[in-house]
Length: 485
Image 1: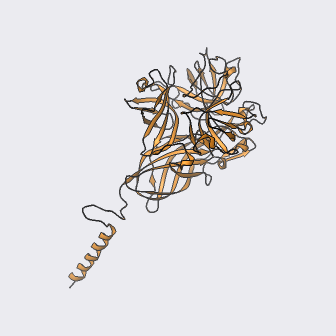
Image 2: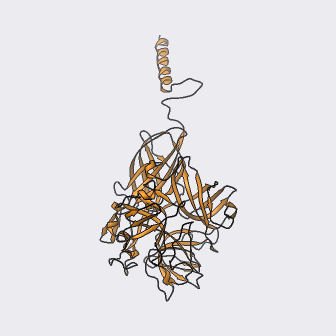
Image 3: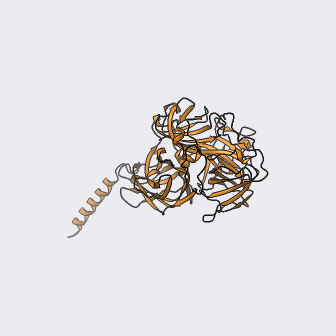
């Protein structure tokens, strides 16, 4: 008596199962089938505080502890980061992009929100209330720390099987800071609407990238851990490693001008492009010609003492030697370090293939008097004592090289290879009040927010990665990257 109703029920159930997964039996599921994975590549950028705020920020750091994507249904999905302890330096990414994740596997589906968890946000800054006076005012160099937490950003992301997607996570820094004049009193990276997400690549009017490219990833400094006939792997101290493949257009600034001069366990700097498939193309390679790969990079905060040959920096990057490192676990981004030059060799410039305007006092000098507040320098540490509490750390050095400073200001005018910025809108501790020109080099320039340098809008905020050559040079700045905000 129950066989017919049971058979009917089974028939109805079979029909429902078949309609939920349409398509021929031999070809598999073709609709309503959320199976498989896509890959997501994610870069980090930032919008600086408004130049009118007159803040002198040397470093703004936080550890990104996780990123998840929230689907329309189901549990949040973790995005595997390029480093288990990814330390973001937000001041850096106002003018550049760093890689949070490359080709991270993510299930197909529709996603509506990204959640960013973070710890140890910290801002290193100072004040200089007197326009035109270089260096931090006495006893104003300090740090402010914030609470660990999480922030969200809305997204509209649909992923299909085997799709390669690119995203840019941007942090708007201004609203995260509470300030009284030039003094920052609090930092809250969890402030609402701090983070936003954009798809990559940008529109053609917002980038100089070619088809198939997602983002510039420039000035990656680290230790060469592997080299093949066509690729180089560089391990950074805080953001994981990048393996980039060379091609016929790659520039090698070394003896053989080819990949043959790349050596493992040496410090180097590479420029790359993140491609739409999550791979990296090597565009430029330059070794750091130091005898040691235990290297500190930092921005100078005050006028050096030319008698003792000492100056103070805030650490902005580092390289750890493969073995016997005195810096690993001791030198942290944002730390304040007193540097003592010991019988220094002539200073060098890491030029990165840029045209260097003549007249600067830094090159071949051996005196701290040639070093200016706002310049960024790199050196192999002969000795090192970590910062503890409010006491400065210390380091000694024999070799010193000029490196890139990250600056933001207001555009005055722009042309094909040169743009100008209002000196009064630059960070006050740099001590510049007059119109400043920024020289660029054809073939060695990355732009973002516009398609070419001449399109920089006058009156808008810019951020640049530039060599600050000093007051005797004309122009004083040689820029490699420029971002319009």
